[in-house]
Image 1 (tube, rainbow, N blue to C red):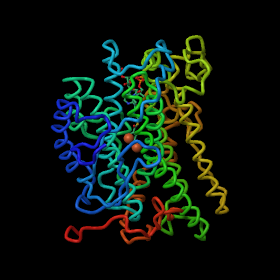
Image 2 (cartoon, helix red, strand yellow; image 1 turned 180 degrees about the vertical axis):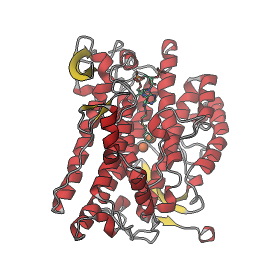
Image 3 (cartoon, rainbow, N blue to C red; image 1 turned 135 degrees about the vertical axis):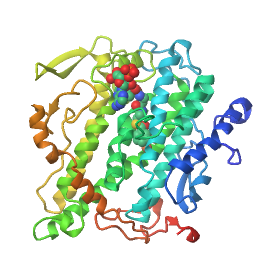
Image 4 (tube, rainbow, N blue to C red; image 1 turned 90 degrees about the vertical axis):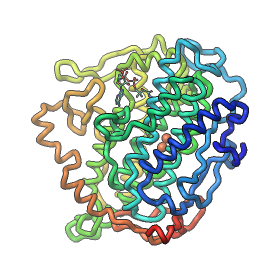
Amino acid sequence: MSLTDSIPNNVDLASDPKLLRALEKWQPNFLSWWRDMGPDGFQEDKIWLRTAISVDSNGWAQYDYVKMPDYRWGIFLAERKEERPIQFGDHIGKTPWADVPGELRGILRRIIVTQAHTEPASVEQQRLLGKTAPSLYDLRNLFQVNVEEGRHLWAMVHLLHQYFGRDGREEAEALLERRSGDPDKPRILQTFNETTSEWLSFFMFTMFTDRDGKYQLASLSESGFDPLARCTQFMLTEEAFHLFCGETGIDRVVRKSAELTAKDPNGDARKLGGIDIPTIQKWINFWFSSAVELFGGEISSNAADYFATGLKGRYREDKYSDHVAMENIYSMDVLEDGRLTKREVPMRTALNEVLRDEYVEDCERAVRKWNKTIEAAGLSERLFLPSRRFNRSMGMYAGFHFSVTGEPLTREQFEAKRDEWLPTAADRAYVQSLMKPVYEPGQFASWIAPPLHGVKGTPIDYEYVKFNERER
Ligand code: BYC
Ligand code: FE
Ligand code: FE
């Protein structure tokens, strides 16, 4: 890979002048989108960022100070594993496709476009957060996540340009035209249209929404369409850091919350400038219920098609013994006449739910960790995940009402409890009122504990952002 290339890459762009030209034409549009919709401000500041420079597992990234518009957004595919046949579905055992099979063009394009919209959407959602960062460490982490989501957009645009001809180029343009939250041209999946205007939501987003990304990307990383598999494999290496920001970010808020709750004579963390545990719970209820929607319907013929065609498998397909899943059944809670009953559905149509199971289990693991933090502070409160039926607007439970523990409720019963379970305008105003920037190296806002370590062996008081004084 040559860093002097206009677009750093390991896909040999130099040998495909037509593709290179098309991407070079898209590049200024991307940069202009970044200037308009990327982080508001900070574009002239030097941020200590990691940049992907290869796919070598012992040194794929380089850390240095960069101004964000100068970031080297590159295109990387993981190394091709020695001839690994398709691992699941109706084409099991065949050679993976190096090109798009004609009959799968529509379905593949749709998966890639859905994935692609999430990446710029998240940058748009987070664009104001720099102005209220609780520390330089967090400010830098925010921008790290943002530039990498920008690179994921590049990764998808490369697939669209290389494999989908004119349609692909049109989709790539449309990626820069939709806007998160815009009623006329919103991003495709609803979570990516929610406002993320304070940092508690940022941590919830990187915990719960980026984690959907992990499971979706993992199930695409074994795709029979080889370029998609290798592209998503490499995206996952960057994604681990985004999840780290979310999981440890919430832990740091919880740590501070527990500390302040223990310290205040009335056990009220808000009195001491913290976020109380019941408020954190409401944010979990909101963001978790929004993220579980991203797995699609519980019973889905699309999911069955994705699996049958070998385009999208399960999370770590190698853990399963039956890779065809034609005969198996999945036992699922369904609503019949307002009651929950178990029903057996064909496994292939239940694959969205199977992936959601893996996701929920992973989220439960994180909640156990946060509860250890609360316990260590000597408090008896505990956080929990709401039932996956709670607050749904997609799939089988949409249009019905459930409690946080998953019992069916009437609309009136639900409405009576809403303010106890979900953030109210007053809660949002309170959290927003805490959002004051802290830009002194090593200093942290009142509502969040410092991290255990700095980034990549740096001390916590490292100058992660060097402000351009003329800009301040
Ligand atoms: N919102 O059969 P169904 C990430 C549509 S996150 C709106 O139930 P299916 C990231 C669906 O399209 C990972 N619409 O589900 C994170 C279908 O439409 P049609 C993103 C939705 O098709 C943080 C209809 O409802 N990647 O990377 O299996 C920062 C019935 O669909 C939603 C992917 O998701 C929804 N939530 O869809 C940055 C991977 N759910 O056919 C990045 C690609 C479903 O009626 N996507 N619909 O027009 C897929 O694999 C699938 O499309 C889904 C599930 C997972 C979304
Ligand atoms: Fe991403
Ligand atoms: Fe991410």
